[in-house]
Image 1 (cartoon, rainbow, N blue to C red):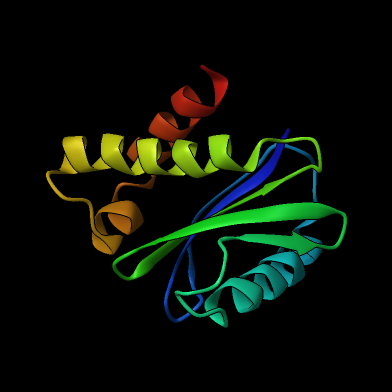
Image 2: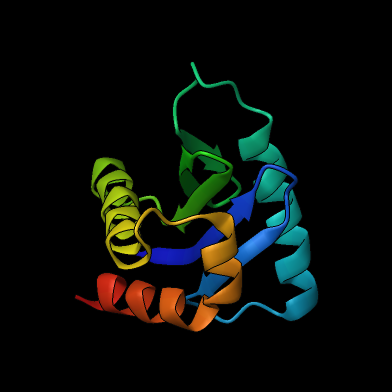
Length: 120
């Protein structure tokens, strides 16, 4: 099960977030900081799947954006890895090559696509 979805830039700023379980706002900030630090500190040669606390992180980098999905232990990592790519392809199609600015300025559009992708 997906616990959260984050889209962050190389500076560690969250551009889009969606939580599928309730997390208090102060805990979200701490969680995002730790997750972002874990993903940004890894080299491109390292695996995109990370065991983190009580869940797994699956992430992909697209230019200056990182997309990170937190899932429980029973989720299929490759399925989530492809889900991330599919989401980016949808945004690319809509925005004609999506960029960080598109995600920042059109958050509502990105949220709609994410909701449609994650719920089927």
